[in-house]
Amino acid sequence: MDVEGLVEQVVSGLGFELVDFETSPKGRLMRVFIDIERGVTVDDCATVSNQLTRVFEVENVDYDRLEISSPGLDRPLKKTADFERFAGDEVQVRLRMPIGNQRNFIGVLEGLSEGVVRLRTDRGEVAFPFDEIEKARLVPKF
Image 1: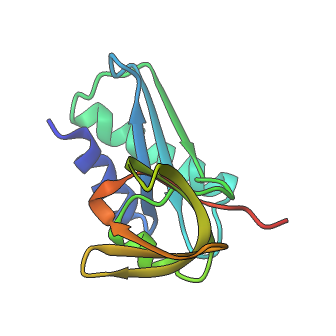
Image 2 (image 1 turned 120 degrees about the horizontal axis):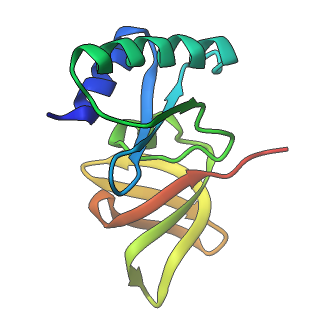
């Protein structure tokens, strides 16, 4: 059974975006990170938790603990749509393989086109394939 697909279906059905889904090595703990344009409230987390609990019971999904939360100010960027949506924001990116002896970049996200992410850094513009990104996050502004 594709638990992540099930979670995505429930979360999007409730009007939220599934940002990330994590499980512990044996699947006993499930963490679901949701977002919505207006911001996630505690009531939103409770709503998603209650719905997922019911669905997991019907689908016989075995787990010990379920955690629902917002992705936080340093939201991870996972999907290509995230790189389009957050264009203009400052991001931190870690690549799988270095470019010129550098794997970590911080800069303003210029966007994504034809599978290439563009980032404006202090040293100029950097471009790399979306598939080469190991990890990417928004940099919080205080």
